[in-house]
Structure formats: C-alpha cells, structure tokens
Image: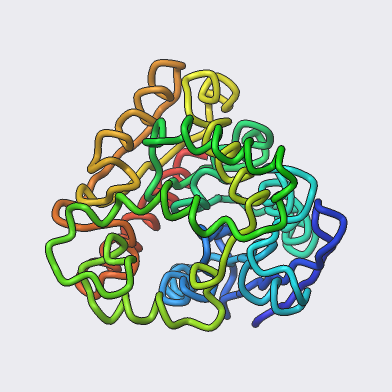
Length: 312
C-alpha cells in the first residue's frame, strides 16, 4: 500500500510531498529515509523495497527546493525558503508525526544519507528521544573549506544577492571531491559512485535538483547546517541511549575517506553514546547504489534495526 502525503513546510511557503510505503504484512517498525543534497527520495526505491520485504513501513519525502516538492511549488528549485537551515529537519519531524498518527506504537528509525545525514544529526539532537535508532550514511566531521565558504556567502548576502544562483559557491565547496577520481570526468559527480550508469542517472534525472542552481541564500543555509552539527557540542545534545549506526564507503570524499566518519563516531563515543561504525572498503559515496554492494548495505541496516528491536 502507498500513501502520498502533502504538508505545509516549516518555511510556511511550500507544500512538501511525501510517501508512506506499507508492506503487505504485519509491520515490525518504521524507517524514515532522508535524502541528500540535490536528489530526491525515489533514488532509494531499491532500499525502500528491501525494507518493505523485511517488514518495515518506509516513509520519505522530497525536501523543499528538491524533487516533486519543487515541481509542485513552481519557481522553487534550489530555493529552501526564508526560515533558515532547520527547515528540512523540521519538515522531516512533521513527516514523522504524520506517519506515527497513521501507524502508532511502532519502533521508529531514521536513515539519513549525505546532506540527509546532517539533517538526521540535527534531528536526533532535537527529537532523538522519539526514535528507536538512527542510521547515518555518508556523513562527515568538519567540512573542508566551510569557514571560507561561509565568509564568501555572507559577503554575497550583504550585497543583496541571496536570490541569485549559488552554483559557483557550491562548486567551490564540493568541487574538490573529484580529485581522487581516476576515470574521465564527464559530469563532475563521479565521486558518488564508480558505476558510470549511476553517474549518468544522477546527472540526467529530471527530478534531480543537483543539475539546477541552488540559490545563494540556500547555499548559506547548507553551510550553517554543516556548521551546526560539526563538533562534539552537537553530540552532547543527542540522547545517550539512542542506538546509532554510522556507515560509509572508505573512498567517499564527503567522509574524507573514512577520517570524517570516524570523527563523528568518536564525538558520540566521547559523549557516552554507543555507535556501530562500518566502512565498506573500496566504495565511494552512494554505497546503497552500487550493484554489487547495495544488498549487503541493506541487509546490514536491517540487521542493525533487528538488533535494536531484540533489545527492547
């Protein structure tokens, strides 16, 4: 069964489009998927089906300025609104509330990939007590070049350019990620996956906002989001008893080839949390989209959730 839902964003402007996928069996729990920068939630269909097959309801939406939410709110591609960097996090919490109203009493898990992992980290610092567990995928510690990017964006905002394209600034912030890619650079997204078909799909997906400019004001919100969860001070706000599974590819530049991933886990461990950390050797950013790995990644996520359910 599939529910399509729509709700007013925290930005008080957009109607967010979301979906609740329900397996044809008695559900064991709920997993909410939080997608990354510039993409949309249907890029996780393989994972959604795997989780449903394992007996989990799956919820997902398209962030403001992204995917079908941007299509349904014309003129908002790459525009996150004017309520600040917590907009997407608050929207994810609203989706959680909607799903819980429909399916109360079930253990609730949150999965965030890439930018979605930063949203998830902000979420668990605010609402972590409402969850049974959290999976972070493709996350990182302090982001290279963040302070310099923030200064440049603040200057552009002071000049009144907030509603202009921030593509150049996003390029400066993320462009270094292809430095270790040894294949021919065709799209500039090669850092996400070795598979040329995944690269092509990502670059040509009409619902993929990565191919459309993010506004300067939204790029600034992105920087503030990264900054807000980029220290041990963030980890102190996360409930100590929340189980966390932190995963990535060890060739993922977002996670600084593993170093940034372990940095996040160490912040949590140093503040009293239990974290299960796993790096998949030889893989880049989208470990859930590698044809030879995605089944294993999904099985490992299911195993983590089952371990949490067994402990309840």
